Amino acid sequence: MTISEQLYERAKRVIPGGVNSPVRAFGAVGLTPRMIASADGVHITDEDGNEYLDFVGSWGPMILGHSHPAVQSAVIRAVKSGLSFGAATKREVEIAELICASVPNMEMIRMVNSGTEAVMSAIRAARGFTGRDKIIKFAGCYHGHSDALLVQAGSGVMTAGIPDSAGVPDGCTKDTFTAVYNDAESAGRLFREFPEEIAAVIVEPVGANMGVVPPKEGFLESLRGLCTEYGAVLIFDEVITGFRLAFGGAQEYFGVDADLVTYGKIIGGGMPVGAYGGKREIMEQVAPLGPVYQAGTLSGNPVAMAAGMAQLKMLKENDWIYEELNRLGEWFFGEMKKIADQSRIPATINACGSLGCVFFTDRTVVNYETAKTSDTEKYAEYFRYMLERGVYLAPSQFEAMFLSAAHPDEELRDALELTRGFFLGEEQETLRNESGTYSRI
Ligand SMILES: *Cc1c(COP(=O)(O)O)cnc(C)c1O
Image 1 (cartoon, rainbow, N blue to C red):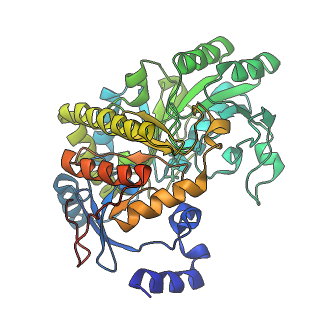
Image 2 (cartoon, rainbow, N blue to C red):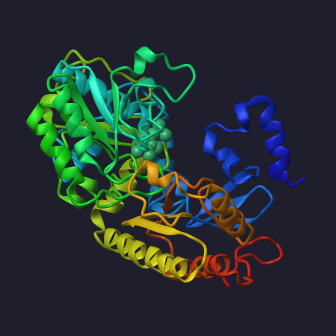
């Protein structure tokens, strides 16, 4: 047994499924997890000393690459001044000022500890602000694991509130409507039926938890229009897209205004951070200013804020990073598409900026229903083929490939060569030498 396998055996005895978040278990790709020991730049190394070219990037936070010196040294400096005070700090003021100065419609922001918490709190603020209970989400969009949001409406037909998870009482999801991604009219019908009852529409401006599904032209604009018309709050869940598509996230990238935005992942630079913020009149509802209660013992933690601030400052002060990310994405996923088009394996490449994915289907993927037409077994085969050859992809068909500004063209070209090997059935080399360490083709 490898060291990873031995650790996984031990893990399964004391941690449910051996992991602290389900997708890490590699269940969907028929393997057991590689236990990761360290990471640097775009490479991660497992406990057995195998090195991989990483396309997960901790699910997005590592937009500058792993162990970026600016982030790492900020954390080390912060640690020396104390790990947590449970009191207000200058760092929290500075990071809030930086974000409010640079993100459209961001007038006030509150730090929390995860994306789940950010979304849960934003919904509470929207309900408090509007005095309404119902919310609309879209099938296939993930908004964290809080009770009210664990609804997907598997059939794609709009349904009210059937929870996806055991342990979620129907009462918690009865006010959650599910509409169809890229079909604003499916939300419009709900608004017409319940014109005075819908507090908020929450959407991933680029769907990135059902594979990658970009918004069709006009989709986000129509949601904006509906929310304005019916007095509901438009929430962009930018836990993935925030500080990725642009510093101002999807609002800046697509030119559509949200009322509230939720963050996670990138905002913490790799530390557990989330945040929600937006229009002043809504955020003024939040305690201690207003009646919407929301709190956190470790929120705004000084070490986490130092990491987040260092990463955001790098992103803010270096415009070339977004040009580079979007250039890399356009080129890399464009090449993936050329490969897929030459192959007899049915595949659709979706991408937006530095996010992309391959769906093993011949359908155009625009929503959850079409995403689900993918051949997940084929994806598992592709995943295993790449992993064996030194490329670490998301261990699920329904996740994104995350590019970072640190991905060098040459290494991406190697990943494309391997992908070509898989799609065209050509024998391919590996990105590893005999000792397991990374070596270019
Ligand atoms: C990851 C994610 C969340 C949940 O964030 P956690 O930090 O895992 O709680 C919420 N929304 C979106 C869009 C996400 O991708």
